[in-house]
Length: 151
Image 1 (cartoon, helix red, strand yellow):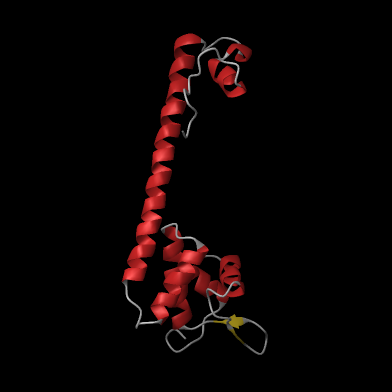
Image 2: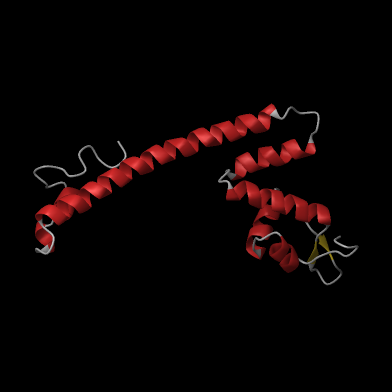
């Protein structure tokens, strides 16, 4: 209930900046409790549901996996548990993000090498003679990407 009134799934989606199929999915997998139903069968939600949905959406915005979100939701419901669990989850996620950033930097370097080599040696020529195409085909004499994009 928000302001004393239950809200519909559409209103919950709007207020929590999510969408209706996502809310249904989160109910289905147990991240969000099953909604109350009106006599008409329409779902209704409370302020607690809105708070939970907003929390879940924010977790997802930060890239936490569904299982990580499930663990964080559990922490919000069990005050006797230590917040170190949340910190450890965030640290593990941070480590994963940093690993992805390293991979993306290597990918960026490889792609920049492709573009630079093409500009210097083959741009404007036939695509079949393009260094980028040759490299991606594995037929380049000297690989522009060197050891691959994400080595």
